[in-house]
Amino acid sequence: MCKKENENFPCAADRRSFLNRLSLALAGLVGAAMSLPPIAYVLSPLLSKPRRKWRDVGGLGEFPIGETKLVKFQDATSTAWAGNTAMTGAWLRRIGEDQFIAFSVNCRHLGCPVRWVNDAKLFMCPCHGGVYYEDGAVAAGPPPEALARYPVRVVDGKVEVETSPIPLTTNDLV
Image (spheres, rainbow, N blue to C red):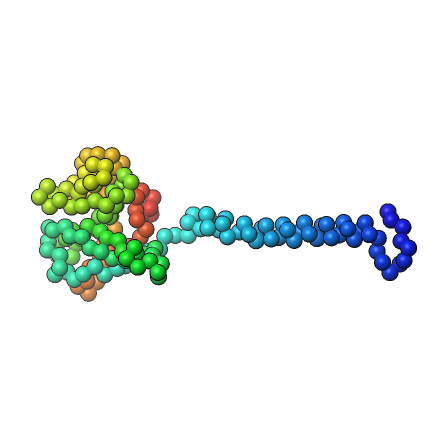
């Protein structure tokens, strides 16, 4: 305990401990404020559902029955400044009057783009030798599962594909 010479001024030791506690509290507050954005950035994909949006890919007349065609559309997760990188695609096959199947253009192995080989009726990944049958099932190579499918609907004569983030695993489409 310090000896007070004047009642109007507190003891120097009390003032020093108060300022010490105050500076530690302020430093802790600043540290917490600086750590929140990185933590939120890391946890946000776990807490938010992926954005999905229906995209118009063309009219019914543009897709003959039995043919597979590449369609391009804007990704649902793109940002306003993404430009051409916001574009993605799907392999769309018309199987009936108003029935379609849309396959992801990305291989389920490592996400490389697959191409449709019409003569062989196969999807092929040129990077690692992945091969898929026309129904999207794995025919050969390293892919662990069939090509991902996008939901498709027909509204007022227009074909629409429901976009989602690039599906590389089964969990990505849930």
